Image (cartoon, rainbow, N blue to C red; front, side, top):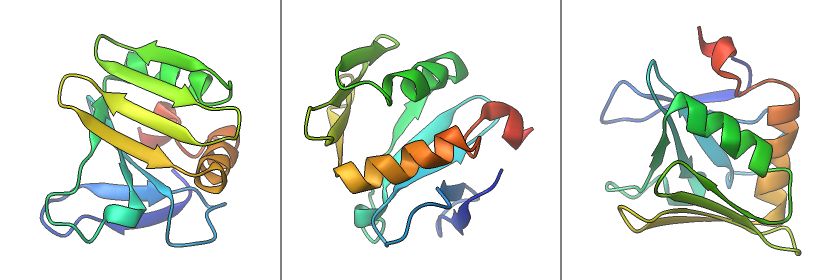
Amino acid sequence: MRGKKMKKESTNIHWTRSSHCSSHTCVEVSIGSNRVSIRDSKNNQISSQETIDFEPGEWAMVLRLGFHPSTGQCGSSRVVTRSANGRVEVLDTHTDTLLNFSREEWHAFLAGVADGEFDLSAAA
């Protein structure tokens, strides 16, 4: 997997930002063996930082939905909303976790998606 790698201090989880992310505020992704997690790097200094987890099939939906200015559901409790101005909200209705990304953050993430940086096969 390409991109900028980071390690969460309290666990052995490796976080990756898109190589197109040019600031400290980015979508961060961790691809594990049975889940993909995302978080907002603006909040990575918070000890109880919020993450949203996806099963592999749901992650494919996130990647597809990310390119469309609309709302779509990924699995039973996760919703991705991309507004006309480019801002994106990712909501887990089960845990009430909400992540907000600016247009620039999401565009950097999508550029990484287009380059294959967050493909599940890249983590294997």
